Length: 184
Ligand code: SF4
Image (cartoon, rainbow, N blue to C red):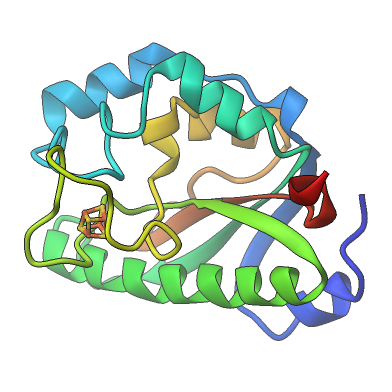
C-alpha cells in the first residue's frame, strides 16, 4: 500500500531507513517481554508496558488488525554510549519525529497506532492498574511490549540494526489502515 506523497514528505526528516511492510510479516515472541519483566524497572508500572499492553496474543491481534506498518529508524549521535541520560535524551527527538510522521499519515486518511521506544511517562503518576489510561491517543507502547523482536525485523527487512561508533539507531513502527475500515 502506498501512502500518498510519502516519499517526498519523508525526505524532510532525518529518517535513516524505512520500509512499508505487511503486518502478516511481523511475528511476536514472548521472550522479548520476559526481558522486559526481568530487566526493566518500568515493567508493570504503566499501560504502555507489559502486562498492561495485554497478553502476547492480544498484542499480536492488535498488530495484525492493521494491515500495514511503516517501520523506520533514525540516527542519534552521543558522546558516550554508556551515558544513559544522554542516550535517553536523544530518544525524545525520535519520538517527536514519530509523532510528526503519524500526523502526516493521519492527514492522508489513515488510522494509525504507534509502537515506539517508550514506556510512558506522560502523567506524573500512571493510573495503571486501577483505572484506564488518561491519554490513550498520546501513549505509545514500545515495540518490545508487543513482543516484536526489532533485530529480527531489521534482518528480515535488510535494514541496519546498529551503526557502531557513538551512533544509536532508534526504531518505530506506525501501524496503519484506511480510516473508513473502523467505520465499517
Ligand atoms: S498516559 Fe498517563 S495513564 Fe496513560 S500510560 Fe501514560 S502515564 Fe499511564
